[in-house]
Image (cartoon, rainbow, N blue to C red; front, side, top):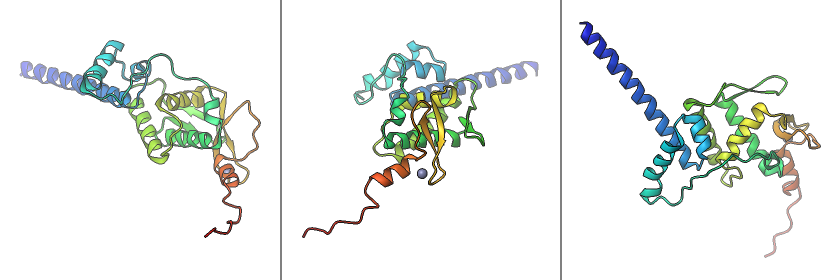
Length: 206
Ligand SMILES: [Zn+2]
């Protein structure tokens, strides 16, 4: 009986390890598809650079998938990217809302952002991918790639260069640069005012 008990326990341990590794690989492949950097993939999956390189080679480079590129080096860092136009600002705000919905961050009553994950892991990575994939579905003209999305999550969680401002017209929260002048107008209100939707239609030329 003792033998069977040990055998069963050993099998369970092997199964758990197998499930854990499978989850790591699935996440790595999901992130490679989004052209995440090796360093970002390593931080979330815990896989070594060498294993990530081999996965990429096996499933993408050697399979004829030339549309997926492997990015190296550090993630981009400038917060300007998120606020340089109302469209970018709106898209960054969408991502922050999705991070909140995925419990990657928490927004308190004072609109301050708090990270919910002590450090990246496989579950964190899958939630980040889910948020990014939903963002791509919502914005056909996506201005932010996966690395910008990853960097936004870091900036809004730990950095004081970005914060959530409140719109005077519609009370919506939006991503804003802490060092820029804020006219308390959210990107949606800004776009609807400047897009000409309030201007009367010109007569149609036949
Ligand atoms: Zn507004």
